Image 1 (cartoon, rainbow, N blue to C red):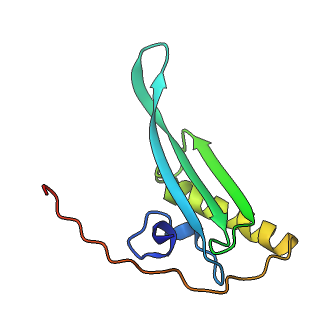
Image 2: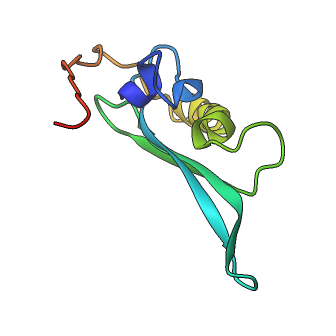
Image 3: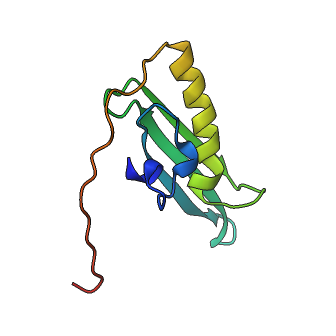
Length: 111
């Protein structure tokens, strides 16, 4: 969930007010099969909501994005949000009933 709801997360554009959203961003190099070199990117975001009672899963993948960024959270996050909001509304899924837990994280490179 912190990918979406933490200010420093890579999927903040997928956040949906009133719902806990859990997801994973993805950015991958693409290989040109003819030349055998990297050429282009695949951007993706996979998520489900509400995270505290999962009902709906949405996956977005864009091959070789051409406008702006090529990062999954930047490209696919807004698309995920739009599709998920539509699905939550259409299926009359109630908002989340709890806030996400905050677990302390400490990371020290080299340890």
